[in-house]
Image (tube, chains in turn yellow, brown):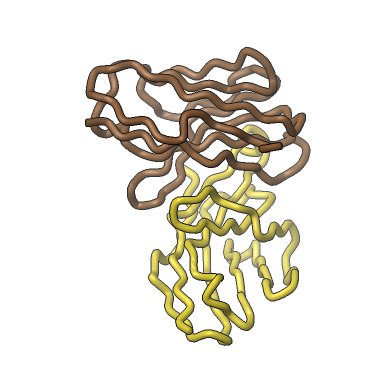
Length: 113
Length: 112
């Protein structure tokens, strides 16, 4: 059973701080890793994806991947109240698993003004 | 202009009824999905279709039957609805050779 684990939170950070969201996955064959943001009552929207070990930066967001440790994280710099949402980690496997994303249960982030 | 559209947005029905949710995408994607999101926000895959062929059928009761008349449509029919079927159902699409999903806006199903 492929699993993706996230701390459910809530994670509270003050405005302007760095929010750090973590995710671990069980399937060593996983190829691609995604972070989605979901506002209450809305559908998930893609923030970033990462394939290779290391860091990938996009604006205030940095995704970090360590395949040896089966760990992926998302850093949000200069956190804003508008970043308050649930962040979903998702993993795409290989072969037949490449047809689906397996999601973690999400981490709820609250940015305090 | 909506990329992935689902109808209806809200569905309230009694136990034992049969209902359908429709999904259409205009992105030219070849793969479509149904996900169920429970009250704890856990998104779990139900079905995946690639070029109208069923690829993934997770452990879902037989009361749930997907139908894909063409690559742009994936509908979900549910028979004999139960209280536990209450959830938000998301349709999504992707291009199999690319990576990310585009989600529909969701259908909130409430069984009373």
